[in-house]
Image (cartoon, rainbow over all chains, first blue to last red):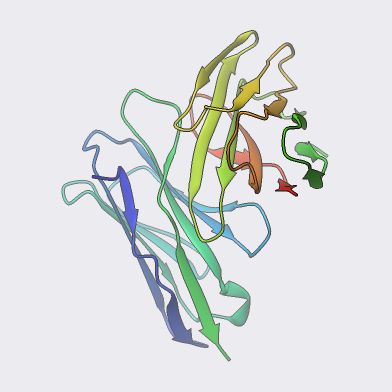
Length: 111
Length: 112
């Protein structure tokens, strides 16, 4: 079983819609959760992190964490063509400082 | 400006040659990492280092070597033993306590 799993997509959404990305992880003791955005040919950039159960909002982005279900999600509201990218979920397992990455979900926003 | 500098951005290599990718950071981060990314794939950890003069193998260390002689620098050598080295290589650093990674712009290696 992979440590961090994401739907590979591609996820296609119309402009203005909500894009919903999901991530599950295997280590129940994981402490910290990160969402990175990666444009084609570029390096990943951090867009959100979350440590506690519940929702965390930053602009059009909302991260949701449910530790009991070992599930973290990212919602992108009012999706824009500039949101078209691959989104990587990363998890910091218990007792480790390295992050484990999912394979990423590719999002395409249709104008 | 604080950040991570990788060089070269693009590199072509003939089979059988070793190449070294440079990574320098001025963020004063303790930990540094090298990842490999293949097309349509996630990030795979090659090597990582928490302190100077110490480093550990990641998931795919075979055919690679690193050194950490200075806090700011963590070069990666892709040796001729690496069977399929064509990939996008990413260097990153972090504050150990938070785990948040900061990435360089990447180095794209192509073996001819």
